[in-house]
Picture 1 (spheres, rainbow, N blue to C red):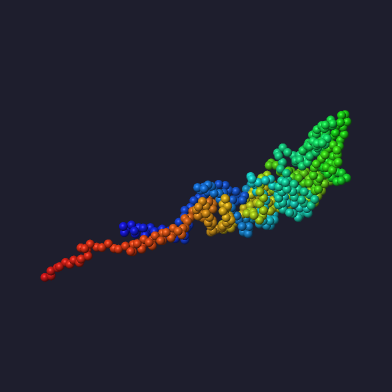
Picture 2 (picture 1 turned 135 degrees about the vertical axis):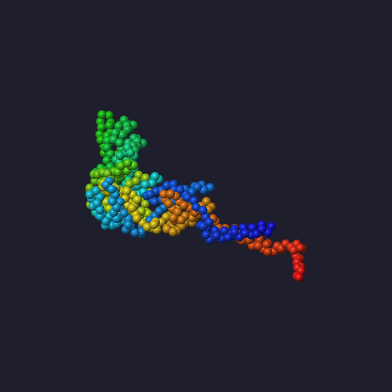
Length: 450
């Protein structure tokens, strides 16, 4: 019984000691697990990790960011032209040759622009100027939105593969035939369309003009042929005509209209309709400056994505180098490959290890996403367990090493400590077992000495 009591005292004391150790040094008593990477996006430098728990899947994402205040003096531009790769410093003022042309690095700055995203929308980024040499960069344009520069309205439309930009523009209006108490409407301006009215007259659309010069100004108009028996006549009807047989509904132009049409294939195309009725058209090429023939308007296509999201310079974790020469300007985003002439250019950041920081996100969100750097860690609670992510445990190519920490309990500590004290008191108060009588008496041995 005595040994059993000693064992209980020892176990209670060990339990109390362990609980104190958990409170003081939880990471030394914890275990670790590797959460494999599910996906890595090199553009945003974000890794996705899925943790399986008894409550389901917990999704974690870790974004790797390089502080923009970090020195870019060691950053590099890697140029490959088919004969090999040449490395140049990515610093302002650096001059080097690409495809026989001299390029100068004019800026190294935070990147802003459009990133491809399957859940995004068609987006285009333009740099605009109404005065030579004075640019407003990275103006975002999406369908159903517009940009106004002086007297020019710029709009973006997404085209189907078999759809022309002209046919799309015509969908903004309609024309109709007035027949007694009703109007026969047509939602397109296809030449040859029309109908016969109740009195036997045949109306046929011959032409639609977005801009038609009248004493009232330049406005949309249609030309319609009316056939009555053997007689026919053509009639011009505008949006302001008080015609009793034909009506036209179309928004009157208040600005020069610059319309951009985009598809999933090919470069964006455009049509510029001037208020005087003239027009010009063309194709927009990345990084190439376009100048309007009859307006002080300069435009440069920076980017186009059929499905993307816009990233501003304030929230971007990336840098870019801007290269210029006489006829072309090239923006090289960190981590991306851009063609300049016949060469392929990449921007590579060279940073010390402690310059890279991580931002941890948990879905569903639990708290403000923490940011941690070299030598730091993040503590969090997942599926009822205390967890810890160390800076050294983040590997975007392999997985996320997470420590699972034991949980300190003041109640358990109190139980173990209290039990130890109670058992010690019981041991102290318990009387000792009496010795047998033959062990209580003194026995002497008598020796005879000669």
